[in-house]
Structure formats: structure tokens, C-alpha cells
Image (cartoon, rainbow, N blue to C red; front, side):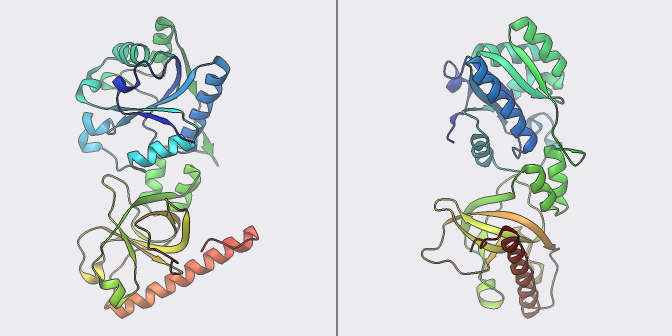
Length: 322
């Protein structure tokens, strides 16, 4: 589903309201975020309002406490696409500046929610905070809603096997390499997307040929070797693959790289942009004594990936992607 995307309040002014609005950082657009958006969509339909999502860029912490800014689960472009896929019809990306950070809770509601967006209903999570120094809480929002004539609904968190789904929990799993658990909380595989860049030329000569991605700025990257699926977004071509996120210690690397080896070569033109979807952790990256030893390990990794995809294929009763 396509969404209208507004990159400022001025773009959105007079074009979104009257609306039912959900607000948040929505990093990862995980299952909890999807539930929040779903509640907003249902209410908007029943109340004949325009459904809308308000998110922030950069992450507010980058402005108010840059020493604590988290690495993000997805880039802004990914976030917008995921919000649209979750059903968002209007996405407002509010540039988070020092001026926005200085707004009191009342000013935030008055100037942004009511004046600019004509908000009639707001849906947020239990831990929602807003306004200068995060003084506004969900209870504050309810009180201001009564004053400014909009409904404020607090949506309970979504749990999976007793664990509250949150962006911070997903970041912890990704940082430890547990991409499988992170994917279950997300409701899809964690992925990295971008243009293919020229590598160092070592793989094609000494180990195995790979496609290389430049690490997206600010995005969290799980370190190690993973079973992955590689997709060409423009055509939906896909390949089973294995991916290393690391520093290439065997070759004295000092820059973080993303190197993906396709289990079967592609047919036709080489993709210029790919999305790498992380399915399962294989091993930590480590230094090998020489290129031959590394190549032997990569072939063992490939065998594990092939076995994984065979299990997936057998469990579904159909061929896996090639």
C-alpha cells in the first residue's frame, strides 16, 4: 500500500486532518507498532477520520542526549515503507530539532496535534513521553485531550511468550546475534538494504565471490556470519545466501563490511541494489591463518545454509527461493 508522506508540518498542514493519529519513533515497525497502527486505522474508519502516523527524524535522543542515541533497527526509508505496509495512509515525518525539543507538552499538543494536524483522536503506547524533558505522559495526554477536544487512547503493549515487544528488546537481540528472536518480535526478518559497492577484490580471487553493501549510517548491524535471503527490490528476484557482517580480520580489515555470498549464481543482469534478510546466526567472525582456511570455513557455512533451506522447503512442502 502506498502512503502519502509529508516531510514537515507545513507540508501536512491542511492536508491530513481531521485525523486519527498515532505517534512514536516506530523504529523497526515491530508487532507492537503494527497493533498500534491497526487500532488507529479501525477507529479512523468508524469515525470517518483520516488515519495518520507521526514519527520523528532524527531520533529525539540524537538532539536531547546525543551521547545516548541508539543504533537504529531500520533506516528512515525502510521505516516509511514499513509503516505504509502496515496500513498507514498518511505518514508525517517531523524533523526533530531543538525548537521541537523545547516545546512544552501543552505547546506540542496545541501547535502540532491540533493546529497543524487537526487531530481528533490520538493513539499511543503506555510508555509514551512528549514535550520538553519528556514531561508529558499518557496521563498528561488524556488531560490535554479533554481540554483540546480530542480523544486519547492508550494501547497496551503486545507480548510474545511473556515478553513485551519493544524496539530496545529487538536491539538487544540483534546486538547479540539472535536475529531469529529479533525477527519474531519484528514480525519479519531484520534486513539491510542498499546499493552494491565494489569490494576489495579478495573474495573473487582467494575465497568466494561476494556482493558487498555499504553499512547504512546509524543502522544497527549484527556482527558475525548469518544465513540470509538476498532480494532485489526492483524485481523481487531472490536468492538463498550467507552473509558476513564484520571487519575481515583474516585480511587485516579495519572497516565494517557486509559481504553476501549467493548459494546459487544469479541469472541475467547483476542486481545494483539488494536487501539482505537475516534468518539465523551461524558463527562469530574470527581470524583465520590464511585465505585457504577461510575459504574452507565458508564452504562449511554454505553447507549449513543449504541444510537450513532444505528444512524450510520440506516443512512448507514447496521449493524454497533460489
